[in-house]
Length: 338
Image 1 (spheres, one colour):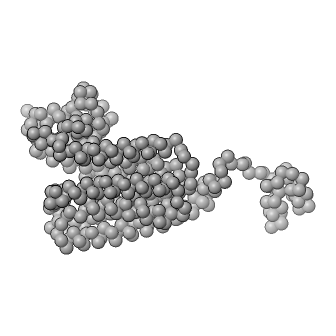
Image 2 (image 1 turned 135 degrees about the vertical axis):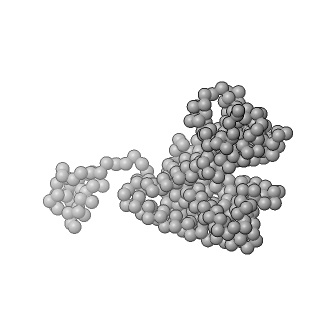
């Protein structure tokens, strides 16, 4: 213990006093390996230590369990209400508001609040208020949710729907939840990119949602405004939003905290392969499959990424499939001509 104490005292001082202490203890300074000085400020140095990373992982796991529990209770309450009133109109309200609740919860359980965490949670809350208000208003206008109307009378299918939504909520809110144990970091080169990407995505989604009904032509499909450049510009904005939130959180995340990348990945996969684009594409295909103008519209309009129609229709099919994500599944219900 004495030799360890002598070495500890000797390390911080480079002058004669430390040599005296080492000499008295019989410890040779030439055999002591002095740690390299970090160029980071002191408050950042401990953040990357193995012990700190281990503590953060355990704390993050605890916070994620709390978020899962809150989500379970939240979605269960809305499920009971939907079954009791035999309505599917609560789905979007429960989903968007639950994500905002988790973002605010992450601030409450955070070890130390940072500007980065506040901005990410604020971004999620703004997204939830904007999209939630729009969706609830649309359902009120429709008087029922066309996507889930048939499920309202089938409690078993409603259990599946609400369970799936709970998982989606929990995974989508990961950028804010992961920041609850993150380190404090200085401004990174990616931060202005994240802010710009978020604002652009939010604007794109909001404008596309506002334009959709008025963008429809006399036959029924939207092809004006942003909808002239993309068949689903609102979904592209949604993907941009959650990608931006992860990019904004990433510089402060430690180890397991990068589980937050699942947020934009899950959102993208759901939109592209499950509940977003496939459903709307198949619905439009069944309505307009015999109309040659609709086929021309699909051929010249990008499925997701906004792009000038005159240029898009000239692109080779292989490029449309890979770079622009116009997968064959979106035409699987479209009968072949001739």
